[in-house]
Length: 157
Image (tube, rainbow, N blue to C red):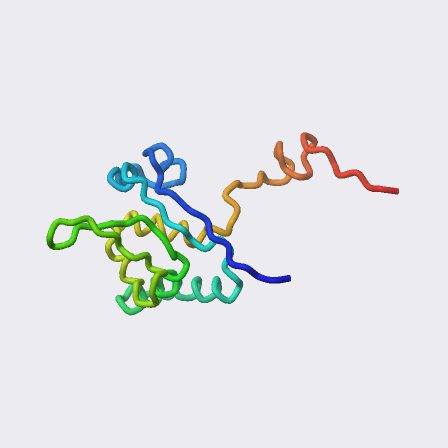
């Protein structure tokens, strides 16, 4: 068995309804990012060591929100975003692409160019890209594996 990293493209919710369906407050939706079709390519299958380090640094940041802890956490996430379509205006007013955080080990600061709620959304998507999105109904509910609505697996004699 060979572990190979798999990436997937995520897109910022295009409508406020999609945003709310993902569990976010409607006032935090960023229409400019939605209309611009902001997307990022993120790692969808981190290995266990990567995930443990990410969780540790996230907890460090959540329990003690210092600049040092935020930087360590974002450095750990950066390599998981090798591409995105973010652009900004330079001092001459020209629109220029912003290198993705995963382009270079020092590009973690690119996260700082995102509006806070877009950064929060992206961080959440990075953290959950490898987890199933559908919720499995509790046992005994319609659609649950032991529910009468789902046929029991047959066994060969």
